[in-house]
Length: 393
Image (cartoon, rainbow, N blue to C red):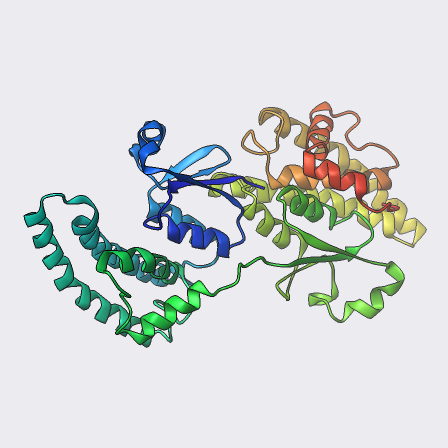
């Protein structure tokens, strides 16, 4: 689970919409509020000498709109497509135009004559912008873009306090749509998605998902269906299969689709599309050999079973050698010299493959052995393994 730290002054201003977004998205963060008098001590440590700054896992990111856009994407608040995203960006840039006009007169200008001139300009602009925003919200069913909640709505609701202070009153008092929108956003409960994973009480296809969820700090109900009870559950599952991950009541199926989704959330899906493609290819190759071994192991016909075993055991050393070379080449990981979804899948398959092979699949492959140990001793994965139910495989 990534650690977030937001640094800003103890005011609303540019930081409040980020605080709103983080809280709404259920992202825990340290809310560091700097006293104005202490700012000189901090300034040199901030990118561009400015705040807000969002620190994620020790790396600093700056510019309020860049930060807001990042969180909005994580929280599905950045539109349904590129067109809506562009509308959201344009709306937010317009909000910042009028906020900047008000800020110039209200916060920064000291010369009383020039301050009055800036105030006059800002107050001439304000009703034009408010009229435009009111029309936009009315047209979009009570929201700024697309008839649904977006980053733009959070920004306007968060600017309420600052603008009220700058103009000496409620900026939305003559604008009922804007007023309702602000109230709507500011009364939203904190959002935290609920996850429920349904699979058998075995490792198999479900264990890498359990590893990922635990490692990423995502709380979930670990529903383990007894094999004898499966007929009662099968008709309720998409495609009549498990694993199934239910998020906020909606079911998602196919283990690789689920794994890819969690890997993206946990920054375990590569640094770019090329690394993502390598991760996909590696996992598909893992599933090729797992499938061959599973086919042989569960076959009932003894003659056919022996033939399948022969084929699978011919393939196995070839795959293991390829995987060993890949991990060695990539500095102890499958892709990109860093931890990825692929490493979790191989480490999670260890129990299942050990059961089928009646021994450690990695015993003659030191790089794979070290990698499995590395993943399985990650703090949250290790804690899960220590407390998970005992299974046959």
